[in-house]
Image 1 (cartoon, rainbow, N blue to C red):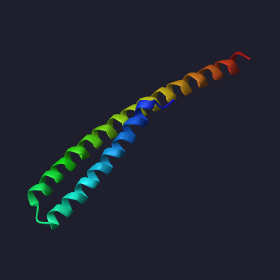
Image 2: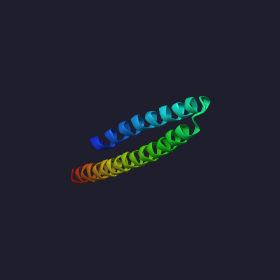
Image 3: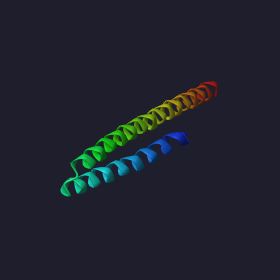
Length: 89
């Protein structure tokens, strides 16, 4: 079973990614208006958000990996039990 925290981390990462993209768009708008200091700050904020979203994606992927490993172990156990049943019959 996939852990709920994996999905939540991915959802949060996507939301932060969207915020970062909005920040980049805002920076471009400020730059067009001649506000380069503002645009630089907006771009720096977007980079920070992007890094946070990458960290969250990484956490979500780790949770997915653990869920896959758990599922594989369960399948291995089920297979062994079924093989034992076949042999004993």
